[in-house]
Image 1 (cartoon, rainbow, N blue to C red):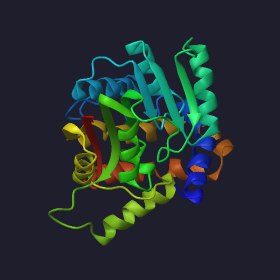
Image 2: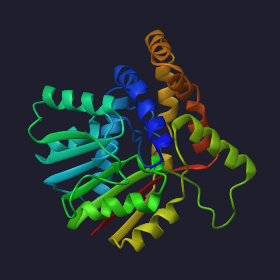
Image 3: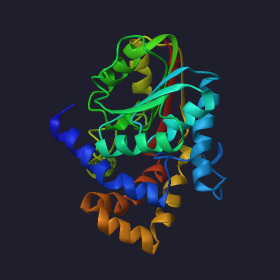
Image 4: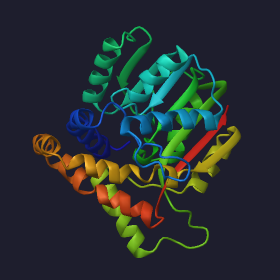
Length: 281
């Protein structure tokens, strides 16, 4: 990962994670609002937990003993999975602030013996081959400058018979029509604000998964189920405490908040997709 991109991602999450937790909670990912996206009155934290559970059910993961959370944030998924499966969990992030807060949260939940959090590059992970029986990546793939290398690393550290689950931001498939100039501009605006090198389509991720080669590969587009999330986030940001927190967090966080509508409109126009991939080694 390039030093500049690494630093941009680190600084973005160092600056914004505290405010996100204060306003929203420990889960730094989309919520699930029903397969048809109509459960819009669902409590926001419950929607995020429901997303985790729905992904596990979709991937048919019923047990795990040693879990890697790639792009762990402040430990939302890691600690939830540690409790659910009575498992050991390791989370990695580029943000020292996130890793420190996740470690604190593990201590608060009495999970520090089974859960650890490291600052590490997902494209060059500090783990031996065949280490984890579940590799979990919930909304981190969009940050990776080399999608193939990222998935190769996830595959490398996965035990034979283990499961890889990735949920990530994608753009629409381009088999029928290439991205228009306006769509490309819309994506570039999102990339700039959220420190993304680029995103790819779900069919492209599926092709990489076959190259690894994963077995029993499944993919799904859950864009409709998660799209209401961004309008819920926008509503939650229009409070005096959130606005004051934005001013304290700095310009990159303010830009991120101002750009929430880019994601909402991206889903509305069918440009942004929420893609899932799973398979076994």
